[in-house]
Length: 266
Image (tube, rainbow, N blue to C red):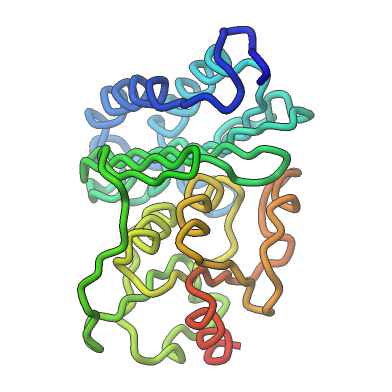
């Protein structure tokens, strides 16, 4: 087992570190929630002062905590230690549009990849007071094991979470679902892992929109498929610009559900 320069061992729990970091994140972001304006970025997404300050905070803390690892953050123009075998993929504020307008679903996503494989995920959604941690094969929400609900699902409560897909597919062809967009792709994925929806459909997105949540969804048997039917290869998102190689939607869910949605939407 390798010891890094901080004395922490590779494979050791990061829980104490992220718990302290989440407290700092809350103190930075919550006072700015709904109180600052967003600006448009070149790719059409939005950014606020809080995105940039959160990115700087998280990057600084990670460099001290895990100096041998790389960091790929949405708001940092250049990756830190891009050659490292372990990479942290960071979305410092997923749900910026909701955050800027005072809506509740937004937060921090941190995913750890080892040689391209998502192995751990740490997510904090301050306004809804939810923390998700996946490491060493265990998924937890607010400290308790994260388990899908065993309650039966009626036909009227079958949920499909959607994000930025209307330019690419007519989602109305997916019949038998209620459609929801809560404003955060990472939160949608966490709701899938928790059994609160049947699948998610996301438009073209980036490494940091997926990596923090993939350990959770994969642990419960979900798969990822692009609309053309091909599987996600996470390694293709580890190089700039860190986005989908083809601009098309992706479906994440149980294999049978993904197959049915592909048949309906393609």
